[in-house]
Image (cartoon, rainbow, N blue to C red; front, side, top):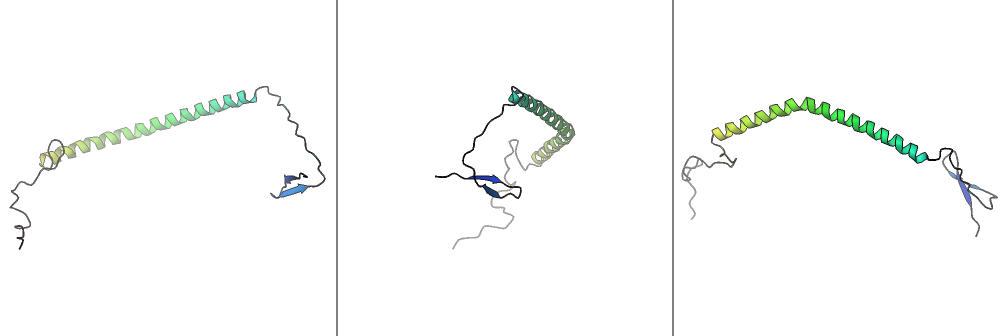
Length: 114
């Protein structure tokens, strides 16, 4: 069995390299003894910066939204109080029935079955 070697050309197409009988890869060690330590340190600094920026954005959002949410809460409490005072719901929020007996329907008397 004969192996073939292909390389990716500048045009993005794979091109066969003729006449290659064998290939050896020689890994060169980087000058930095611990490249991952430097990379990890940079990553930690990047993550810390992102967390700092995210925290600042959330605090700014809350500073803007807090008065609006407190006002909405006051309006909802006032609306709930008005609905209870109008006797539409009871203290637990359950709807109250009509103030008239069942035979006093606003649609007239019930139809008789024949």
